[in-house]
Every structure is written in C-alpha cells, then in structure tokens.
Amino acid sequence: MSKFFEALERAEREQTLRVPSPRTTDGSAASEPPAAPSERVPLAVPPRFEPPVFRPPAKTTELAADRSRRGVDEQLVSLLDPASFEAEQYRVLRHVVETLRKGANLQVVAVTSPGPGDGKTTTAINLAGALAQSRAARVLLADFDLRRPTVGRRLELGGSRRSLANALIDPSLRLENAVEYLPGFNLSVLPAGSVVSFYELLKSLRLAELLDEARQQYDYIVLDTPPFVPVPDGRLIAQFVDGFLIVVAAHRTPRGMLAEALDLIDPAKVVGLVFNGDSARRSSYYGYHGVSPGSSSTAPSRRSWRKS
Image (cartoon, rainbow, N blue to C red; front, side, top):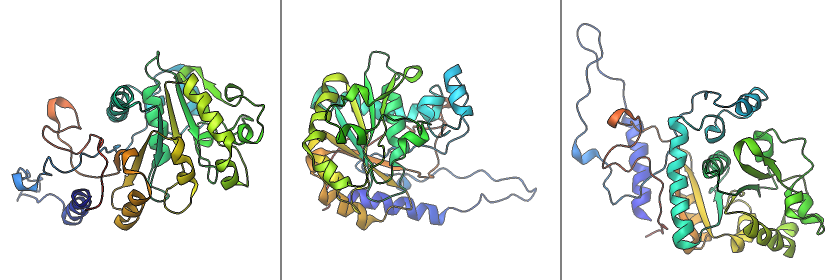
C-alpha cells in the first residue's frame, strides 16, 4: 500500500509547488522546460483514473437534451455527452470492468469511498452509463445508499414510486417492478427510496433474493454504496458483491481513512482505486488531452492494494 500513498503525497506536493508560468521581458508567457525524467511517476506506482474537470456537455440526442433541460446533472457525461473526451475516460473504466467480468466473473460491482464527498455517485452513474453504451448489455444501476440517496435525484427520478426500499419491505414486489428503465440510455435504475431502518433492511434475507434476481436479469449490476468507514452498511452489502471500486478524491481523502477502508474490505474484492479530481497536467499526445505514453495518470487501477 505504501506506493499508492507515495503517489498521493507526490500529487499533493506537486500541487503545492505548482506556480504560474514565468514571463519574458515582453510580457508573454515563457515556455516551460520539459519535466525531468525523475519527476515522472514510475510505472510501478498504481495507475490512477481521473475523471477530468467537466465542461457543459453537448446534447447529443433528443432524449438527452430533454433530460438536461429538466436538470439532469451535467457531470453525467456518459449519458448526456457520450462522444466527449470526458466520457471516454469512463470507457477506460468500463474496459477494466468488462475484462474482469470475463476473467474473474465480476458481475456485481460496488462503488464506494472511504468517506463522503469523494465522488462515488458520479463515478457509479457514469460507469453504468458507459457499460450501457453497448446495446447488447443489460445494465442495472442501483442506489444502495439508503441513508443519503442521490442517484434518483441526479437522474430526475424523484417522483418515482419504484425503489429498493419498497422491494426490501414488500417481498411480493419483484425486481422488475421496482426498477425504472431509461430506454434512451439502455439503462435500468433502482432508486434507493426512503426508509428509517437501514441496518435491519440490509441484514434481511430479502436483499440476497433481490440481488439473485438481478444476477439472472442483468449482465452488470453497479451499486452506489455508502462510504465504507463511517457507517456499517457497506460491510453488510459486501457479502453479495463481486468487487469494490474505491473512489479517492485527490487532496481531500485522508490517507488514514483510506487505509482504514482498505483494512475493512476483503483485499480479494478490491478491484481498484479511482483517483478522482487530480489536477496534474495532461499531454496532447495525438491530439488527445489525456493519456500520456508511459504515464499512469488516467487509467484505473486493476490491483488490490494493501498497506505495507
């Protein structure tokens, strides 16, 4: 685990030391000297997936335009602007999940974070949207954060009576009757709903039944789960999950909290770390403002990291 913490420290140090470009005598910006090889993150450091700073997306379809006008979050680029470079970054993450689906039977993917505010919900929705871009794929996005449900609101499903809470409380309600289908996005959504007894519902046998139904009906099930450290919900859900993606916010997530989350999650189920919000410079290799050859700045991690 030490190498990943070194990468976090390096990112924070580079952010602190970053200063405006020097000026020449005529007032123009002087060109920056190329980074010394020693400043590059070595390939041994875990690769990092960085959703970039988002710009307002183009409305690429009539349905996307209509939903955008009604307030669907512009950060959901996999749904609203799938041709954008920003959406392409989530297809990098999609490729990892698709590869592990074939090789490691990764079907139920939980997206979590050590604490709140790290970007797990944005990552979960965009990952599900990226997977659903394959018209042959059957994808379910489920909001398992019953304490602070967000997925339904961000997708403008606030008025829906279909929800995970209803399906957990009513054993006669089948999964397909609790799910909202968004045909324009080829995506099924299970909003969290509203409950009070979070812990008891997540301990119930009914949860296992619902996820068994989901496995039979969908190729990919993406769960937006609560932060792992402050509440026990993620630990209750873990037994039904094939793998966890842990979202880490650059310059925000405390390293001690990340270490605690990794201690609590079965290492065999840690699919990778999503490094969110890093402001490191990107190259313009072949006209793309993203992946730099030999760099580890944009690809998601595919290993299970442990503290050393």
